[in-house]
Length: 208
Ligand code: CTP
Image: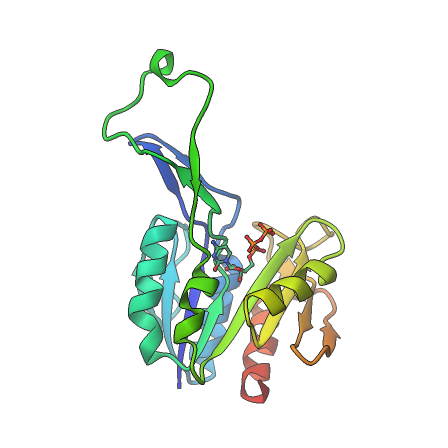
């Protein structure tokens, strides 16, 4: 069985030295890739710019921008049985990216942005019998927003977490998450290492 997972942030260039991005480190998505490989899945990991080693046995495709991540997902999706979208895709990108460093005097105080595509929604027509898993990183009680995203993105499972809760969020080794399923079932997990969260997620896949 083949599993495709995205991880990390995307980086949206303003010019060769400046970019828009977010605080994702890729730890959760890389843990999913590792747990899946250890459980015998053939794993393709589409990774944004992160400072993490490739887990053993995982095929890695590096990308930088959201548009590059979308293109990689569209290319890799047909061969997968499960798609886990753990990446923190930048929702906006600069309208134009300069090939040369912009001089501050020429920049003014306004940066014009255009929306990036929603990767999960864009590839939804290609879903077929595949299982799609998403993540919802919220600040504050996450399950209401996660339930909305589960429905709107047509997912089979969403992993909700409050990134501001103690032991959860960016650049830490632990996470406290709730799994939400389309039939309304919820499973609140205790504080676990990201590795253990990933293992629990992989264990749930055959039941989706
Ligand atoms: N996602 C995606 N493409 C985007 C943004 C998000 O595929 N352009 C995926 C993420 O990988 C995650 C899920 O959608 O699995 C939820 O992402 P999140 O950032 O929590 O939600 P958004 O859809 O960006 O909504 P909002 O900004 O309103 O919270």
